[in-house]
Image 1 (cartoon, rainbow, N blue to C red):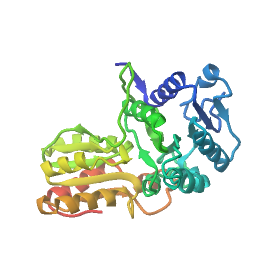
Image 2 (spheres, rainbow, N blue to C red):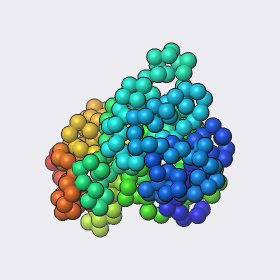
Image 3 (cartoon, rainbow, N blue to C red):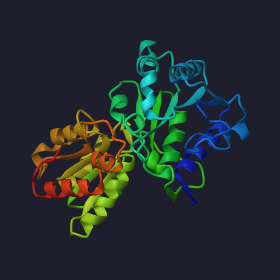
Image 4 (tube, rainbow, N blue to C red):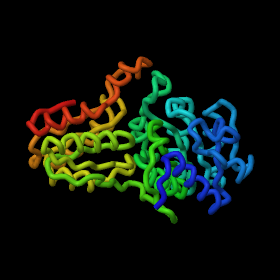
Length: 329
């Protein structure tokens, strides 16, 4: 198993998909000679040419619409949006068209569209380039939503997304692109809707996704030094959601902390907490705790950015309150 970066794993998934299926092509800004601003499409133009690596104008609405049209015509387009914040420019195409066309056609149309976009705060990119809008898309019936946290999952989930006949939104955290990890050498697929226990434990369950899985793992190590054995569950996929793995873990530990970089109000943490509280209410030893971004635009100032975005110490503090039976939000 070679050790490669998260960005290289995504690049490998794209290249392998394009080699296997001539109907796979990529649309996006600066994805050709530049190789994408996070190098994910580096080298693909040289191998596959400008017909399949399509540099687009600075108009997300137009090339998202092109991607939907291509999908309807039998292609498997991968649309790269430079920052997930810019998905707002094509919400009608994605949420009113791509998400609904299979349903509205009575199943006669399939939309094998993959949308890739970076999420999260990184190096003071400020309010318009630092959001984590996964809850928006998870709230839209017809879209599948995945957030890989490791290079192996980045490869496996993106490969599965490209093969899916429904539109899949793949959200990649900017701070993960340079992270290295072991990746299977051969054909690798991760099923959509399958969470993974990244670290077993007995005292409480830390539930994360994307970069917050890494934060949860770091928090678990700190808690272990204080004799608290935390299990870490990586959701990997929001839609479909692996309710069984989440509930099985919390049923064992009887305590849970849910961590997400999205704004905490009306977001992912609330949905997971509601699921656990509804299904396991009589078995819990403490209310489910939640850790998320504060309800404010992400500041440019590095200290303020850090204060807004969940940190390891926020997770450990929530875990200790949970161990004491005290709720947090």
